[in-house]
Length: 225
Ligand code: CDP
Ligand code: CDP
Image (tube, rainbow, N blue to C red):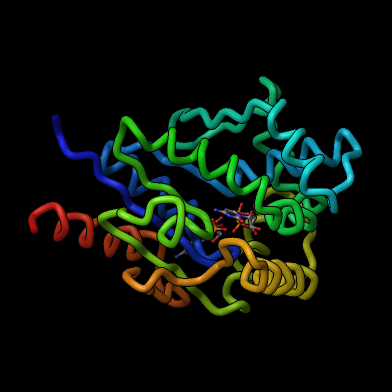
């Protein structure tokens, strides 16, 4: 049987993880798994059902009754919660503002990680998130920790929202990103931290193509070794 290959991409908000992970997965013919979309999906459902976001046990019970599907479609990925297409809705500011709280509970994380590992059992994957290299796929052959300055990351989100026809505030985007990073780095369970064996890549002044190129190069080197 062909050896399965795992690429783990972690890093703070808006560092470019999903954009480059998607392209790298397509080029390599691997499955792309956006773990952030899974935590966002649970947050979306918890807000919709008015579940107490401070109660990890209730959130875990809710998750047990929630089907989350990541479906590859063309160059993108659609996200379904109980068969409802939530691809756009899970990116709304209200979800972004609460997702770090929802994802801080151990019970929630244990179930999410179990689902994520199952997805990677039978195929080669590029998986992105916060704890992929440290916890979800500790044996991944390639681990990358993407970073970029908070100013650059806020500008990237700003441009993204402008492209959607919105009128974002750069200052509030920057504040929201910094606050979410802080919560993700300071939580007790699987905080956002670079795995010891991950390669840090500062993308502040790199284009998407340049980052993808570097990742593909690292994969190639590992495959040949
Ligand atoms: O795309 P963006 O960087 O804004 O965030 P995301 O990858 O969609 O992740 C949203 C949130 O989910 C993060 O801020 C974390 O709180 C949580 N998350 C996590 O705890 N562990 C992961 N493996 C992925 C996301
Ligand atoms: O997944 P994550 O939150 O880390 O970031 P993303 O959603 O993939 O990327 C955020 C934005 O930055 C997107 O609009 C990308 O097109 C852009 N980007 C960029 O301008 N330059 C890069 N090297 C990587 C991403």
